Image (cartoon, rainbow, N blue to C red; front, side, top):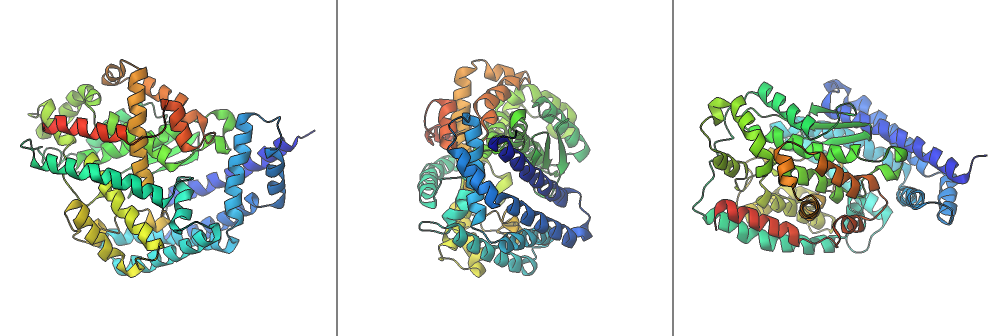
Amino acid sequence: MTTPYEKFISAVKEVYALRSAQALLGWDQETMMPAGAGEGRAHALSALSKIVQEKYCTPEMGELSQNLLEDNNLSLAQKSIVSEFKKDRDKLVKIPPTLVEEFAHTTSLAQQVWAEARPKNDKAAFNPWLGKIIDLLRQKAECLGYDGNPYDALLDEYEPGATSGEITVFLNDLKKETVPLLHNIMDSKVKADSSLLFQPFPVSVQKAFNNVILKEMTFSLDTGRLDVSAHPFTEGIWPSDVRITTRFSETDVMSAIMGTIHEAGHGLYEQGFLPEYYGTPMAEAISLGVHESQSRLWENHVGRGEAFWKHYFPEFQALFPTQLGTAGFDTFMLSLNSVQPSLIRVEADEVTYNLHIILRFELERDLFAGNIKVEDIETVWNTKSEELLGITPDCAGNGYMQDVHWSVGLMGYFPTYSIGNMYAAQLFHKVHQEIENLDEEISRRNFHPLREWLRAGIHQHGRMYPAKKLIENATGEAPSATYYIDYLKEKYSRLYKF
């Protein structure tokens, strides 16, 4: 006889299978879909979104999940699956199916418009779609409910439990520490050779080197793949089908390398869930901040570190003898970690990166609080860019149109990058304590110990614990920005000798 939990889990896995189809269509849209297929894809994604919501929101699933939460015979993992599914369902029940359909259809088309408009700086093409998306997100926030700022309802989608007030305090503290650090670096007599990594590097050779790194990071190409897209991203279609992308620039060799390492960090998280929980909330990240902690840890703490390049640099130098043949290791490391305010977030250095996040967060927060109008976004963006980074965008494509996030409706997402930086520093500090020879293993291209530590501490737990509790369990203390601030100060005062 089928138990209530077995009946519930069968229905949950059906929902997740449909979501997997949504994810596959979204990945294809950004990588391989023919240019003329946009309207049809928008209709398909819209229809799937409606079906998924219907599956979530049946009265039977509401009754089943509520009754199961009161069943004391369930394990902790089973309770977590029921509880997290119910949280998702409770949100979706509040949103009219027509709004779900319209949002999916609009963002599918808007993403395609953005991909064409950004290289052309075509504000006239993109702005009406941006306005539509913001209006739909306002409607969504009203349906979900909030205390204070409607933005909190959107933020909760990506970082459950976080509020704009809490994030404001965190980012203000980060700004207070970052700006003086940036001034010290700019005033230092030590100057990085900024041209070293910005010269012609054949893309075909870059791709071969990228593939070596990806394989040695232990990202499984049996259950994943690497492709090219306009904006690097990771799509966890299923834990056994993880798609990551990067983008190549012939004149910026680190763009693809760092993009690949970053997305592989996300991909390793997606591949690290326990097979017995596939198709349930226990095979999902608990928050985007935790997800970003994995990508930022691999990209910055590993990929920009000396231990990583001690082994890779000779090979890298041999692949590009004309460009790097006379460069010493210290010169290369300083160039790799050079600090210079720039317009593009995904190409920003570690020190200025969070200033990009602060810009976007403050703009989004104030937009939904009613302090900024849609037509003012570009002006506000440019003003904040000058205030925070000391530079003003030369065009919309290097300004407010640069990120894919808004075109696909991801407002409330950006703060998770800085939260991820904070979590990453704390995790990497702890793993160094527990694996004493970690740097030696990394310098030998042995990333297995680090991956296994992250799997045990983070990946395998899915959504069993809230984000802050998960980090506390893994590190032995509550999340703190101290480790991240100390990491930045120590690293860059050493590199720039102040």
